[in-house]
Length: 179
Image (cartoon, rainbow, N blue to C red; front, top):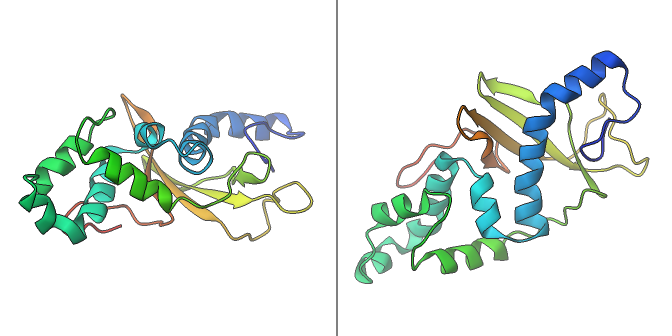
């Protein structure tokens, strides 16, 4: 039904549904563009929910916890330092470089779209699908497409943020984290 954030020939009822979903779609695009297009880890981090930040940091740090400790960095302290919007920690740059190296999806608003009707996973968690736009240029509601799941969570103060991606599972922090 849409290839970017603009509805295409919607009747009033569909337009109302689209308007209600626009905040979550815009938040999903904020992550997708920051991560895959701009390759801006700081903007990506601001679009990520704190639970994802914990799990993402733990996943990265897991195989090198002993090395981090030997260099004077307690793994739990690193995770807590990375939980904020503006990270100021000596391990941030290595984390960002490593993470962006794996961000290879060729996403653009011209070639990718978001599924308009997100699936509710919990009252404040929805599953949005990022998918390549078909040759027709229009994502059809009843068609099946290969897609990238973007699990979004709403918080009263922060609005919608990415809770998980490339997985439909609600992440759980820990050593190891469950993503």
